[in-house]
Amino acid sequence: MTTQTIGLRESKKRETRQAISDHATRLFIEHGFDRTTIADIAAASRVAKMTVTNYFPRKEDLALDHHEEFTAGPARAVTARLPGESALTALRRDFLDAARRHDPVIGFSGLPFARMITGSPTLVARLRELHELREDALAAVLAAETGAAPDDVIPRAAAVQLVGALRVLFREVLNRTLDGESPEEIAPAVAARAVTVFGLLEPALGDYATRPAGQR
Amino acid sequence: MTTQTIGLRESKKRETRQAISDHATRLFIEHGFDRTTIADIAAASRVAKMTVTNYFPRKEDLALDHHEEFTAGPARAVTARLPGESALTALRRDFLDAARRHDPVIGFSGLPFARMITGSPTLVARLRELHELREDALAAVLAAETGAAPDDVIPRAAAVQLVGALRVLFREVLNRTLDGESPEEIAPAVAARAVTVFGLLEPALGDYATRPAGQR
DNA sequence: ACCAATTTTTAGGTTCGACATATTTTTTCT
DNA sequence: AGAAAAAATATGTCGAACCTAAAAATTGGT
Image (cartoon, rainbow over all chains, first blue to last red; front, side, top):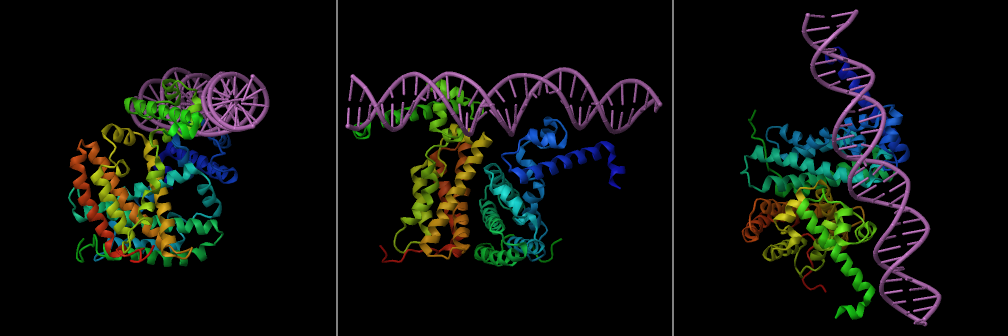
């Protein structure tokens, strides 16, 4: 059991954090993000306002938690690409897998959650920021993997295009979710679009950052 | 004289607006965006706080005014493309012209202004939003010009890639400005990068949305 | 099992942007 | 000149973000 190894304090912290996050998500979905105040969340969680703020410095963090996975995902997919596989191929494969899984990380979040996000300018802005952080992380990995010069613009341009593709597809999943489509309908449709959109980048980036066949 | 045709009321409004904007820009550059309050700006402009808010609904608008030109620029450049010219070619030409002009619209804003923007998370976020509005406008124009089906993902994907290129180049200009480079140094360097970055998109979008030679 | 040190949580307050409403001042048009 | 329209003002509310000091809980050492 993890509780034994991590200690009572740590385990209580996790419970408190989770409880706050759960109450927040419930209230956001019930009443909307902007109409729910930190004080409401604190009251529902039976803690002080400052405790909420301590765990989640910004209100947006309460709705879009687990952003590490989101922002670092594409960079990790590229780092873990197979021998002989390019960055583009790895990201496409990663995306198509996620589509099959109906993974929230590519936009499968359910209708209420999708409504909550798109209904709040604050959350839309935060989502934009997260996409940019993805770009930064991917650009850094691409620069490292290709041994690009520090002032080379190509890794950044490639990252912008690749994350751009993911962003277009994310938007597609979100819009279809808002239109009431089920994950089972959305997944194959968005997979087809992924092939189209990544196909568009193929001539430019088809063999960019390809891992040598025998490496590692 | 314009004052005669537009009337005293309109002319006073413009003066008031300009005065507020000028005081705001001065204070932002002097003390930083986040450390300057609306009350400071109102006091310096000798108007009520609400007057500032009436002219500039959000504080960011005081620093990033004239955003219409920025957001609609690429869409207009494509609409005005020459016969036989593709969207990509028109945007590249437009950018290279702007580089020669040291146009603020591609990032030439001067060191103090560049510092003001990058030093404020609020302004950086607003800039992200403006880039997205650019994308939306360009995607709409591309869809219209190519007669794409309503659910076609290509116009959006193309817009993301093209505006992505502009965004990379904007960032480049801003970073070099922050490094103390002069516009005369930056312009040729960023022009070369523009050729590189747009060249990357050439194989995919080289003839996308090309205006028929004899049209209009 | 207790004590001291550390960490978490709490209480209370301040600042500021955003927003609402009613009132006063200024401009326009007849 | 006077009525109508519009702009600017005064005032107040709300909520997020931030700060500080104090209280409560947990830890590790004895």
